[in-house]
Amino acid sequence: MNRKVIGSILIILLLGIGVWLYFQSPFSEAADSNLPSSVTQGAKSITDLDSEGPGDRPVKTFNLTAEQTEWSINENKSVEAWTYNGKVPGEPIRVTEGDYVKVNLKNELKVPVTIHWHGMILPNQMDGVPGLTQDAVQPGETFTYEFVANDAGTYWYHSHQHSSKQVDKGLYGSFIIEEKEKATEKDRTFILDEWAVNQEKQSLSNMGGMMMGSMSGDGEADTKQMYDTLTVNGKSGTAIEPLELDKGETARLRFVNAGYQQHRIIFPKGSIKILAADGEDVKGQSNSLNTIEIAPGERIDVAYTKQGEGAEVIGEDPNLQNAEQIKIPVVSENANNSIDESLSATTSIGSGITNGSEDLLFDEVPQEDISYQMDLSMGMNMGEGMVFQINEEIFPDTPPINVKEGDVVKVDITNTGRLNHPMHLHGHHFQIQSKNGQAIDEPIVKDLVHVKPGETYTIYFKADNQGEWLFHCHDNNHAERGMVTIVDYEGVYSPFKLGGENNNNP
Image (cartoon, rainbow, N blue to C red; front, side):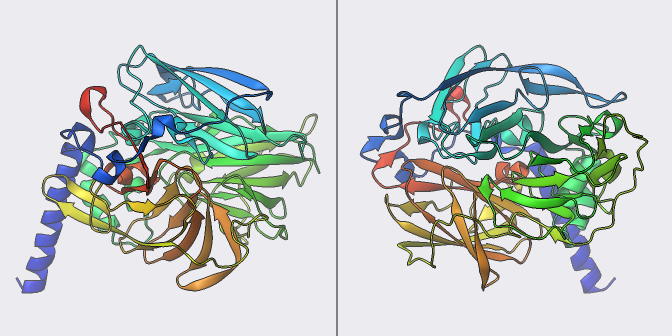
């Protein structure tokens, strides 16, 4: 047997051992960890930061109970889900721009939980990150989140406590901030997700396939192996609720990816225009696109116009695994609604960075005060198994982004690994200025950028929301294995600790 063959066998064996360790030793069961000292030392606790009260604003109050529920995905499959108010997705929250929002969280699970308000700009102490902005809400306890819903757009909420598991089990819901004057009469939200229903999510039988698959170059090898069922609003296949529209009628469709897998949704030809990405309005475009790629954690809004009298279908790209499980029927009242389940061929693919934003953070490329190189990679740690690194470190040892209030921050994000990494920044919007070293003609304002293997993005943001904020991969399986860092403001500190009696696990 020649040396190349022996070397290949050794590499595969080492990877297999590492993956076995990965599943046997999750971070959530590790010993207590401390945040970087810069995060725990400062002049002012984040709990003492100023926050805006209701004043004369309308106050909207919601009650959410975290509880275990037997959830039916379709007529043949059900799962033991963790839910907000007994359903998947959880109770939808819809408010008007400028409302003051109060959400009372009651925890009736046997484990701690929190709520993070994904994509929203709010006070740091309301961000819902255990061990950083609060202690996790213990079984039987309650916590009230309060903030102003300042920016109209599509957002969502989810647990940030051991989120690789808790979001996977259904602890998420939509949060829509409507404009004071709605542009469309019909408005529907579709939350995409994937589940391990017919297998254990962390099945040892999937290890070899996952690792060898990571060599294939599509960046999705791990999620392909981990999940077998795709859902829309908690339902799969024929259980998906139809969208009702008449021919020529237009609706705003808000797509949220709550899972850890990239989705590619195909619409009838000529039927859509992208309206917004990550809650930010985008510039107009022709309606030549008919396929939208949505990254984990991302939100994309489209204006969809029904093309014909009969039924139509919006569905997952059939080239993707388990695609037949996501088909949204579009039907008309008093029409022949026998459904032709075939999807249109893809003519052109759009994504969250296809269109420039209407309102920019910076009209020109700014001069940065802080520059941070963020290298995303995979590694092996014999204590933890496979890990996902930022600058060759895993959280909480990743180097923070140290800022002062008012700084302009430049971050170059490079993916040197072999899996996709949707990088999400809490508490701020950033402007994507270039991709792979080439300036983007129309810069985009977002809170998440999907960095695929070999790609580099340059982003800028203004440090204008004091606190301690996560910047992490929103494939939460990767975040669980270390791909997390902190935007650390000078002069403030977090009084909370990882682990401890509250089992804080962000």
